[in-house]
Each structure stands twice: as structure tokens, then as C-alpha cells.
Length: 620
Image (cartoon, rainbow, N blue to C red; front, top):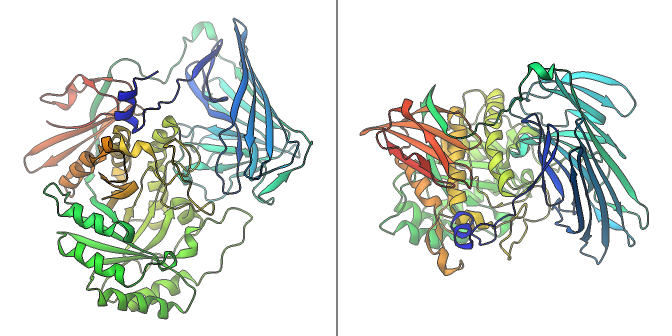
């Protein structure tokens, strides 16, 4: 177990996640964590990212069941795991779950789950989720067997698919490496797949119960629900002539110059009405960060009114750079009436932004497959009314929520100056590994946006670890115990070195998108660079995230060049050419110290070791 003080510095909490238990059966290995399997590998190659038995509430929040009676047996022939778990519903209901996992040296893995409630139990989903990796698999051929017995030879989506690429699934088979095929068979219900890259998850997800069916639904009292996942690996290689294969680099990580180049994006900071006065005070400090753009949030449906613009004007008056006003348009009255009113409030407050970003308020709420689209004026009418109310300002559109909503409701971009959306890494899972793995999905998101909107100016953010709004339920989740929970409006890791590493990894992952602006934080509050008085005393002052965002602001507009990492899941890097020379940015995405070899970068004084979640900038 990690030292509590070190855990606090890294994660913003003294509670570290327990290390997973490694299960082995011949060439088959898996990590057992929280009763579920992840990093399922064969001969060192990841064949599935995870198999999990999950229960979700009516807001798509994930229950954290109490696991008990766990028994693990390991032999030379394989392993067997069994346990029980219990979920307590908000209305006093109880769901009991019993599972059994078995892996054999022949390359076969089964995961059985049985759920039963003596009271009945409300849920949006109860059963298995299978995560398929994306790196090296996106766009690859697969064979899908449907519940009616038909077989389809197809491929996994390359660009991100807004809707389910496959429905009515019974099994899916892909090639893990030459001569090795992997079949994943799902029994007990009808499964379908969604492209989780929409939410920046680094996976395709095959899940139980089609979304076209009603949700939430109720598991009847005393009626067992039984499901089983069977993973079968067929290795047709001549094993005596083929040594074990591994895609995991070990030892020293090599950094070499890449060929891609571009311009560093401008850095934005979020300013909300609730944090406006604290943000003004922060900007008046001697060490105030010099961001290129301030993104002011305004939402009449949250009670924001004319006085907000007085605060915004005070902040804009001391800001050297551009300002953008993002408006959640209520669309409850005539568009001209609503937007002209906001424009009048803005003028009365003396606030004069350089750009506006408008999005109907209802479009922040996701519309899953099978759901009715909410009533909303045509987006072309929304943009026309905004252009009329705010003449002469750059007009942006897109989504105040996430890429998912933009992908599913592609906005007309012809008359827009820029496209924008956010991302959030804790929509589906909030463990440390899953959050950091979302960086793998970001290049797929930006390529998909570019495929839709071409070379139009493109902004991302605010994109933070805590969730500022929940498109998939009625609310974000409160987190008073400072745990690692999905959809939480506060996250302890935002206070630790983890957030700094995540931000540095984020910018590295989206460099080739040619972003105009990237916003990774607010100034103050739960998404801020500065810890406020509501935080524990030991978190006061600048959060570790400050150093990264400040450094990115310093190099905005400069030329970057890609750096190739021999293990990009652990270390990412890029170089920047500044007026005083070149610097290299290097980030360790792991909680372990990493050894580096950057001799081909001609670094003057690069440390041979990079600290856990270390993010550093060094002169070349």
C-alpha cells in the first residue's frame, strides 16, 4: 500500500487504490480489481480491456457494491474466483449478486453472474459490460454473430460512430495478432455495442440490454437474472517456432524525434458566475496566470441574470487577451427575445467579449438511442438569432457538453467561426487507470471532428477531471467523502499531481488537431488552479495543475514538434521552439518512476528518472 503522504501528493487523497491481483492461466493473464477483470492479455497482448459486472442507477451512476465471501483458487491448470456482492437501492431495496470466474491454460475464460432481489430493484442496467481496446484495433476486421444466428463479417469503426455499430449481438471475434483469434460470447440476454470513444473512454463497449428498451426498469422480486461471458482464444501458431509476443515495453522508455509539427493552442480558463469574485481576486495576485482567453459561462436556467455581467466586466478589464461568452440558450421564449435580452444585460454591465459560443440549454442533455429528441428550435435559427443579437462578434457553436452530443447532433457549421465541445474522463469509470487511459481516445475524437468540420477553427473545453454537468442524468454526483466515483462534481485527484500529469498528457494527445484554444481548468473552485478556503488547509495555494497550465500559456502560439515514445501508455512528450530556444515537455502518466533515454533529442540535462505523474519542461 502506498504511503499516505505520497498518496496525498499524487492523488489529493490519502486513500490509494489497492493494487489488482494478477491471475494467470498459461499464456492467459488478467487483473482482478473490485471483483471485475481488466487488462486481459494473451501472450502479452491485450485482447480485452475489461469484463465487468455493473449495476447502474436511474441517473446512470454506477453502484459500488460491497464484495464479500471472495474465494480465489490458483493452480497450474488455471484459476477460479467466486464472490458475492450487494447493492443497496435508494428506496431500501437490495440486489444480491453472485459470480464465478474461471480461466484455463487452454485459453478459455468464463465469467458468470447471477443477480436476484427479494424486494425488486430499479436499475438502468444490470449485467456485463465488455470493453474492447482501441489502439491497434480501431478499423480492424471483426465477425459478429447475432442472436438470430446470422453471422456478419464487418469491421470496428475507425472514425467514432455516434450510434451503436452492432446490435442484437451474441458473439464477436477479432484477431489479436497473426494466428491468434479471440471470440467473446455473451449469453443470458441481448447485447449491443457502443463506441465509447464518444465519451473519451479508450474502448468499444459491448453491454447488456438494448438501449431501445425502457429505462429505468425494475428487476422483479425473486426472479433471478443469469448471464455468462465466455472468452475463447484460438492460437493456430506453431508455438515452438514463435517466442512469446509482448506489446509492453519494459525498462527504459526511449524518446525519439517525430515528424509532425504545428502551433501550440491558446490556453483558456473558465469563469463561472459563482466563482467570478474569487476569480477576480486570483487574477489580481502577483503570480496570476496569463491565459490567452477567458471563457465566461452564462446560463439563465441556472438563475444567472444581469448582475453577472458587472462581475464579468471587472474581470475582463484586467485581462490581457481575448474573452468568450458561452451561453446556454433557454429556448423557452422567442429566440430573438431571449438573446436580445441577454445582449442588453451584457451591454448594461459593460462587458464586451470578443466571441460568443451559443448552445440550446436542452442540448446539454444527452439523447440516447431510442429516446425522443427534446423540443428545440432549429440550430440554424439559434445561430441566426445570436448573430443578430451580438453583431460583430465571432460566433461559435457546438456543444456545451461532450463530443458525444456533438457527434449525435452535428451542428450546421457553415456560418460559425469555430466549433467547440468538452470532454470528461469520469463518465463511465473513475479508477485511476481508466481516467488516464482516456487520453488514448482523444486523437480519435479530434480526427472525427476534423472529418465532420474540416479545417474550421476548433476549440476544446472546459475539460476537467470533475464533471461540471451530467448529460446522462438529472445531476452530477456529490462527493463529500472525496472518493473516486463516476460523474462526480468534485474529484480529489484535481488537487494532486495526477491532474497535472493528466493535463500535460491531454495537450500532448490533441496537438495534431490544430486547436485554436484549449481550456483545461477554471481559476478557482472545484475545477480551478487555486484551492479555495473550502478546501482542506493542506491543499491551499496553487494546485499542481497550475504549473502545467501556466507553462502551456507561456508557449501558446509557438511551434511544436512531435516526440515518439516507445511506451506512450506510460510516457508522452513533445518539443516546443520558443524565442530562447527549444524545450521538451515530458509527462509520466503512471504512479511509478520511469527510466528515460532521450539521447536522440539532444537534451542538455534530462533526468534519467521521471517521478510518478511527473510533468517537466526542459531546455534542449
